Length: 362
Image (cartoon, rainbow, N blue to C red; front, top):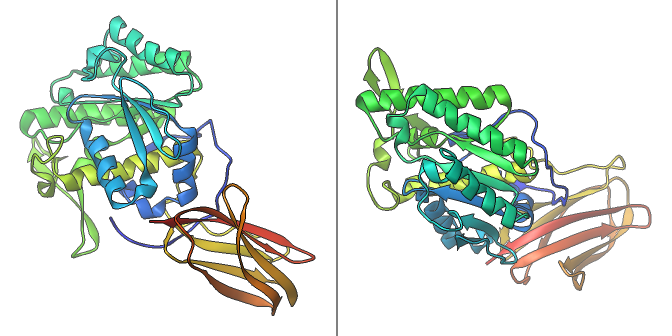
């Protein structure tokens, strides 16, 4: 939703263990902060399980809207099954026998826990599992929310190779229900921060709206019982999809991609990643992703004879944009006429070699 260019290095390394709590909120709702390489890593390596009721569809609608803007963010939903589509983030939606997942069908009862276990047992490639609240937080007690936290902990112990993602409840309610929801959401946040969990802070994403006129975030609150209670921003009042606006869905989809990139191994610094330098001072960087043409920059520590070669993801040489002598310093090159896809750029001299991956979008 905000636009900037990202310098990214493509890496194939994935991290299976997260250190410290990972909290996904409105500060994560920006696709442009995510290096393209980690979007690809999610698509290639992180099949997921997502169970939800109608409010939870805000996330999947958000994914649809993002994909409609750019096919680079391809995903595939399987209704009660895990799809297998190359180049797309594959998501098992629902449980094997039911699509609309209330608490009792995921974590609140032994039957629901077994439904969740069935999905994970029958789809061992799944790397993440999550369930989204509807409006239960408006009325649930502290002990009921603790039961949710306890059930999630049980599942984590049983499936150590799966990352279970916790959620706060939506922030649409006001009055006493909104006050209760705020308290219960704080209970979930405290647990996740104390126990180093992954939290998708749905409520926070409801309450904050990015104002393009002022280039700043705005939080909506209402006053109740001596407190300023965060509540859904008026900009999101509506019922276009999933009981909210398309804009709110899009924002949540951005944050979802951000979270999955972190689970895939991205450090999630919230700033553009810097290019990786080797000790020789010979390196290359690129703007990712690009459309139509791609710019690359290479730094040369001394006068060298250099060749620049572009390879397809299958290893086929597709272009040699430069071959010759370069002086010490930084040099810029433009790659054009490349069809959409993933490419590897190799800069090589007799003494040094550096490589970078670039992504060309439609």
